[in-house]
Length: 176
Image 1 (tube, one colour):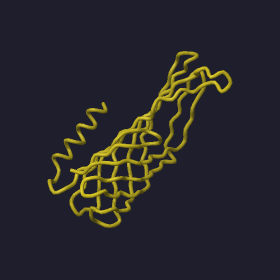
Image 2: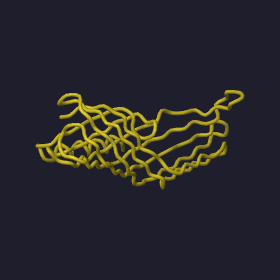
Image 3: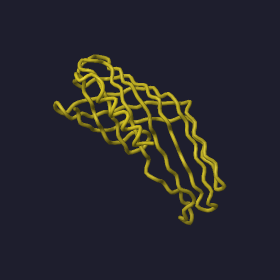
């Protein structure tokens, strides 16, 4: 699914107006996830649209007294975003942002062997700043939040209920 999603976005970017910039970035996305983004922005335009994917490194919860592993957790973020720069142009700019992201989480109980997963698709809103290092390299700092996003996972070993999510961007990329 992920390769199809990323390929479709890249193909769409190739079919759009040639007088535009395409950016590809890697770094932190989601909340603690490592991943990437791809975006398209017309020359001189204020709008930037794109897609992102991030995966949080697997995390093993351990018993605080014995250190024995209790459960394994995996998380992913994937979706589309739009940025609206407050002023046009390619130099460093503040932007408002909106995204539609799928937040997926799976937890496996290592004691009982069962697992559960949940996913939520929700709109995220926020903003950030995108700056440049010369004509071809950029950096991006941003945060989007969705207090209404829910992700609830239940196993025999326990439950994890999460209300609200944040999509944090700290990445560096290349412009084409």
